[in-house]
Image 1 (cartoon, rainbow, N blue to C red):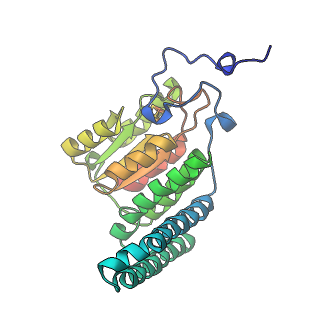
Image 2 (cartoon, rainbow, N blue to C red; image 1 turned 90 degrees about the horizontal axis):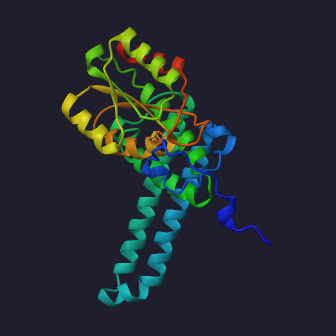
Image 3 (tube, rainbow, N blue to C red; image 1 turned 180 degrees about the vertical axis):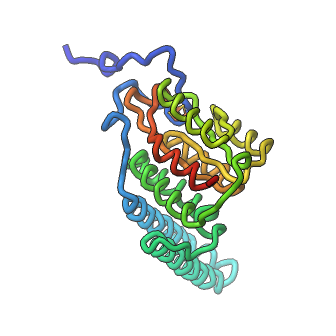
Length: 264
Ligand code: SF4
């Protein structure tokens, strides 16, 4: 008798509360034990494909709607084609400077045009595109690396009380102890942000001048989109050897080096 798909489902622990980013998880072990470590160039490849696809969709829409738009005024399609061409030229020039900035390790764009501006939207769009091909977590890992590299180029310094450490609820006990140890050594306040909404509230109330946030790739990309435009953030992603939302691990040395980079 053929095995039903139901029989293949693996039991999901009852003490695991899934974040909504993982709603569709089927209980199977994650690929590579939840370690999505990727080369930053992966993001540039996928983001270029995303930009090209978005522009192609715009061009197709204009091509199909052109005859109807011409009924409004014969010049409308021409003006819109010129607008699309200008937008495409600007977007590709921006993308190229971003790539160059990352490649040579120099902040060639102001923050508002780089890691705290349209980059966040491109990151979100690219993540959706990669999601359609089942590559979301790897591409998001690469995107967060590029984001961090651009943010670190600013060489920002803040006082210890002005830095905030935001951590998720899914860290393993040893990892949590390690994080609290780092925070204690540098006198940095730590908050457990269970949802993006809560993270935004903590930021609104505490008004930090910088944030080091810890989360899985999925939560990080949506969280950065929500808060990185308002306050400088460095985002540290985790590995999920026990599956999502439970016993997550992170690189404590990197966490400490980032806290030190901000406050020492
Ligand atoms: S950060 Fe942790 S708790 Fe939040 S969605 Fe990711 S794995 Fe789940």
